[in-house]
Length: 248
Image 1 (cartoon, rainbow, N blue to C red):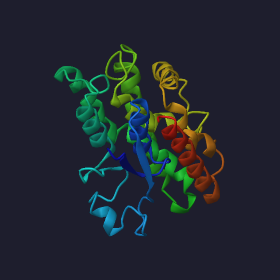
Image 2 (image 1 turned 90 degrees about the horizontal axis):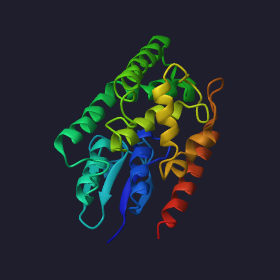
Image 3 (image 1 turned 120 degrees about the vertical axis):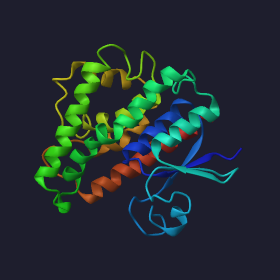
């Protein structure tokens, strides 16, 4: 069986979540470099890519053996979990799965706004208005309060006492803000979230998936250069390819 392909770059939050699931489950894959928003040959807006994923976003899954393609990180993780019977991370029990699905829906207009806090730090040239940045921070903080006070206060993980794809997705956004990565958010007022972040560090696959963020480093005071961003992505690819090789 030919290894499946994942199109994207390590710096992408949903890409990292999908890759983490694959490393956790030791399912071989090929990460195909794909520039988000680019119409170039390796871009997500190129016609050949749009034929695989009409939304022109990353990640995108492709199964070479069947020709099947699928976009959207949550859809990819749910598909792979059901196909391979990974009931531990996406429960077969409908009520348990419902809690995972709740988070996957909650994520998009709550925790996803963490990226709305990162983008202005990375791309000063975009001149994102302060009001937009404040709205993103407020939305994210409200969502974090919900997780801290209504989910992680009563269970080890977001959907219960076992790790699920809800946690992998959430960490893609929340985890990037930690001091050891971009360092642009104070988790002090959120003790349950902080405990959960510490637990997530121990999940197999965490380190190679997040090399890109470790390489990028603290952006709280100064925007990284484009060279540094490229270098971080390259080193992220190297770390991931090494992890893939170690599967065999």
